[in-house]
Image (cartoon, rainbow, N blue to C red):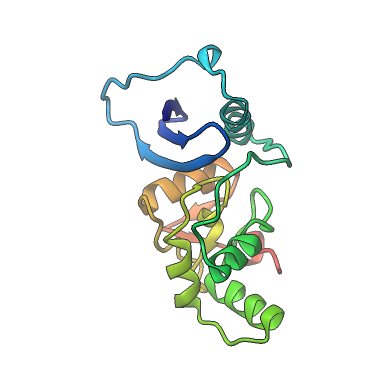
Length: 176
């Protein structure tokens, strides 16, 4: 089942079943008319929780407890990377290289920044697993599954200043 709503110019499409959130996809609203559901019609507890969490995120105060997502189709490596990414606080960033180093230290296994990026491409839970907070070591916003324009929009909504496509690591980078 799908639930679609628009928040801050983003179309948020949530795929869910009775127990889990299966996918969250983002796209820019392009003056199309979307058949958006009304939050009052939702009778799925986890979907309601997800909508509440996303609404609090866009208000600048994301709740700590996240909705239940289905992760059993990910391998251990992806889950480990997602767990690291989930530690990055709202309004902060880190780099692909920093995540690779942290993973290498934690698992005693060498890891590359490119492998981290490839893992994050499989993230089906945009915003909930905040891969938009991962940037290049030189501060470039770099890639994002649904486009760097949406990544920039999310980062700015978190209060991160972006100048000429770059973020000051000195000001916003968190050490893992």
